[in-house]
Length: 446
Image 1 (cartoon, rainbow, N blue to C red):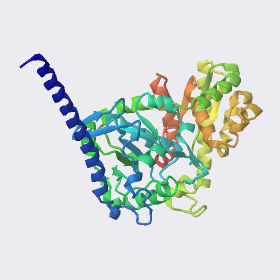
Image 2: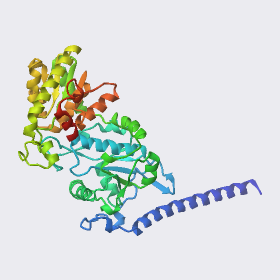
Image 3: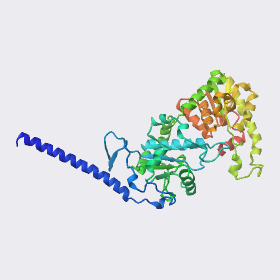
Image 4: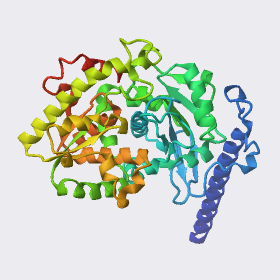
């Protein structure tokens, strides 16, 4: 065979192969779209009163222009410089399920699952839900980026806004896993929180995959598979093996840092407070002044229905505890040569200041009212959510932190401090506290 015939034959084979590959790629796209058209909507697992906006498949983009991926089996054929198609993990906070810092714990656990299964975490909002402010409403909703630094979390794992999850999963089935089998609570969550507030359609409880016992990351990866839209309902009960959980929790928590705004405000505060000198921070929470009274709520009693369990009956015991705590704090400050103390507490629990002022000069005791008195920080007066974040940052930076260790609020700060090698002392473990009956009751109530 002459040389020019060889060249012609090679060129012909090359063109044929390219045409064949093009036809195969086109066929895969056709198969994916046809499969989507043919797949049942499975309305039996969704509410029939929710309209399906994209029943017309011609309006549905399987992949965005920046996300052009063809998957076949376990392989992915990348077109151009496209990114891998997102596999979402949506944290599903249980409706009415705890205060704001309990919600942070929910998200942290969901982020751990995202990390160990290599998924994109959807940045669900939080709700101001502490003290006398209770309820999950549009008014109490706070965006994720008003709470934590998104860029810092994105250094650890892929993140997405909640609207991206809404758009990409609107016409897909959302696969929900959980360790919580409470059907009534789930129904309330999907209706009141996700359907009404977040416009996300979660499946009926019958379609939820309820897990039990500890699972390792490999098991969870197999369970989730390659499903694009997965949700973890009530992440607080997330049950990863203990060794893995602790390791991953430390990594995730180190990337849940407060916003630059909160940090900058704290910079201003600590420079004014005690002239920038080291200070002690103290989180005081005893729950007797919160509504509903924690003791009445646990017993199902109405105010003053039972003297033995009412908060009024507990207040004298709490005052005794407050005095003992103040004595300990003054002693610690004297030994450590620290002049000032910041007290993070609810506005209706500030009688603790009176106890401290018996032993520490009042102008060396700081509370939220002091730091928001000036015009430069007056914006925080009516913003309890941001004020709480600022107070956590103040406690994180303190030379010494005395925590209410049964509180999720304190626990979040404790984890912050653990990550940078700072220690924390618990109020309940201070000298003389173990003999106080109220101490154990408060721990159990928390």
